[in-house]
Length: 378
DNA sequence: AGGTATTCACATGAAACTATTCTCTGAGTTAGG
DNA sequence: TAACTCAGAGAATAGTTTCATGTGAATACCTGT
Image: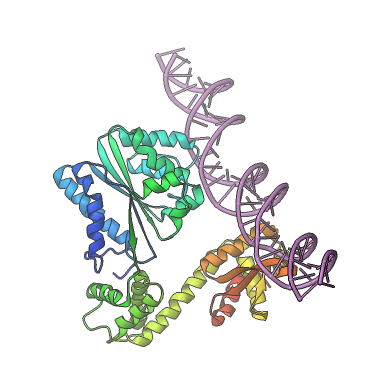
């Protein structure tokens, strides 16, 4: 019950935003095109949740009143679904019941199929693009440009876009035209504070824990922990869930504060192991090289990594990648939060990236172990 | 001493390439009328 | 002649390589005092 994809009935501490979103989108219920809406805020602040909540209830009302309203939700980060221009349009077209192959067609052809289905009936379409920043990053902004302009080509249907992003500066990098039309309306979601997170947790606890299963202070501690991490409610919920599982597995009657610490530890470890196991081979080799170096000294630079990396490749008979690519891989490991890197100039001695391991020392041996076995290093 | 100019060791960007998966098209083939 | 088969052309994509250009400050190299 306490899972990330579970959408609660009631929404706590966000009434004003519900109202705001609803009022912006309201014209859709009268068959008018609402303004495009752009919502941004950090992860776990309820952006997606609220948007879906509002649009879902709108859909119900529309159904009752026979308004031809269609809401489409797409997460642009989903690999192989909607993360490129072609796939996005293809997926949209599929939403209208057409079958579009995953590859093989020219993009403009898919566009025109999409125009046709979309325009085949009179209707209002609300397109929710979650993590829209990913889309713009990978595909450039002409996808968004095309989408925002689409209305002028439609005769019957009308399309409004709701963009959701957790990158706060994302809009600034957009083309000015796209920017202005995409954010006709803007809403900023602030992070929750500890008190609000407590409220959210209490609400959820009602459904997923037995009465009195939590020792006093547990919720407070969870909330405090999450608030420290920029008010991410999702994290708080996950923490509570894992604590519950741990307590249960140990046969404890109550969830206690110590379970939270254990849970925190477990979540981190699981995440790390998961990443290490599921990365492509080349990533694993790079990571292994970093680990090798990191045990010797705290600060590492790109050049050192590359030479160790080359040696390792030789050992396991893997064709080494170029330095250029390894540099990118290091960058991606940074994104994943395994390392922390910073570009520094060391004057006469060049310019490089200073790399620090961002994982607890205690889990290094375990990670190494995993890598050694999966890579087949003797 | 103070001021420029160099220089290192990569970073960062853009374009082009490779291999894979998939569609569409049209020529050639086959089977039935 | 209609239906079928199958090779070839063309797309999209992920993951790279190639080529080109950028960069910040510790040093080297002046210059005039």
